[in-house]
Amino acid sequence: MLIGEYIHTIDNKNRVSLPAKFRKEMGKSLVVTPGLDNCLFIFTKKEWVKISEKLSSFSMLSADNRSFNRFMFGGATEVDVDSIGRFLIPDFLKTRASLSEKVALIGVQNRVEIWNEEKWMEYKKTVEKQADGLAEKLGGVGVL
Image (cartoon, rainbow, N blue to C red):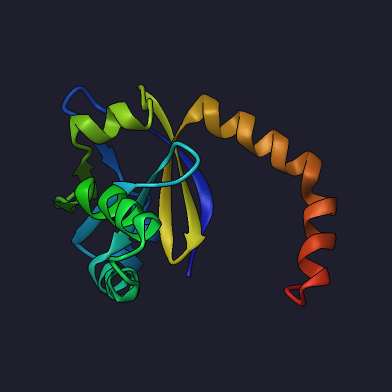
């Protein structure tokens, strides 16, 4: 399971180091795709296959399904992790997520999210203020 928060630097070649704990679980080949909330998602190839199959199972007759599939698949790219744990973030994804020098890598169970560090800190503060209410809503549907 991917968990934890790490702050890293993007180097001048658009490479970022995957935290050692994530490297062990994710392997040497990853899929980076546009995420939600203005971040990027990183999946293992195995997890990406599961997500791809699920997304592809929805009817292409639905405009929402077509749009979301275009969003996820059209922006997805495979990247390799080098011998010291770095991987390249393509320019178009770096721009899409407003990534600058400092980024936050967040483990979220089956994926890693990459955030602009400042945006992550703002988002985290907002969610922390809402945590009790969110827990109550999730408890109402049997999650907690």
